[in-house]
Image 1: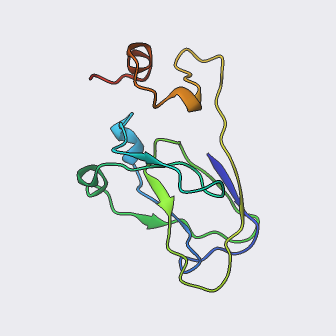
Image 2: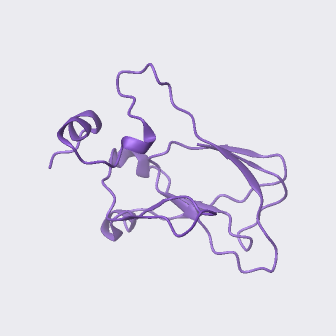
Length: 122
């Protein structure tokens, strides 16, 4: 995932929070997947006991900064405690020709093929 700051994004504006090295957990099946409305992305909840292993860090950015993270790094938006809106540009990319590529929209449909493909064991 790549995000670019369109203006300064301090912690108070809801900067992205990341858990360094959490990507080493590998694929983590989410507890739940929810989409509140058409303006938000689907939210996947990571088990609390896994998140507790890591100290979250605010990824504060200056206008024009670019942050690149692996999609399996534990991350979430911080709480925006201001009256302002946080703007950023976000993109996700995948190498579709890679042997381990799984279409994002199919990743959480738990059929036998997808479990084998993403390394799930139940």
